[in-house]
Image (tube, rainbow, N blue to C red):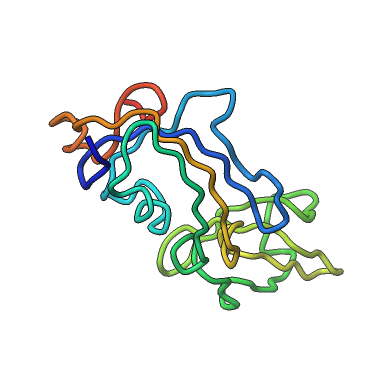
Length: 160
């Protein structure tokens, strides 16, 4: 069976950045199990996995536009430190949930200068080329329940 829309695939993967540093990997754990075509993976990886079958291995490079998007300057803002009411000390690397007109956005503190704090709402991998080594472990039909829920069940899937 080949990977196609509404089919469950289990993959082992290693994700590296342009410097060759490992960002994420399924090594030492369960394979990642997902349903093809429902948005469980970034579009560029999903596109390259289509048509593959159990036992296939491939290397995939995903450009920002097909991954986590380009860096958006509008998501980087400097705000007064008093906007972090109740936080004793704001420091670089801290993550917060910011409320916007569009809803909650996860931001990370990238700079603290005096009473000003710079936060970045871009995904940590936005603007980066992503390099995947992938091995297809299993391909199977999705159950009716998995299709209804929009994700694979069991080990390596979203669970429920």
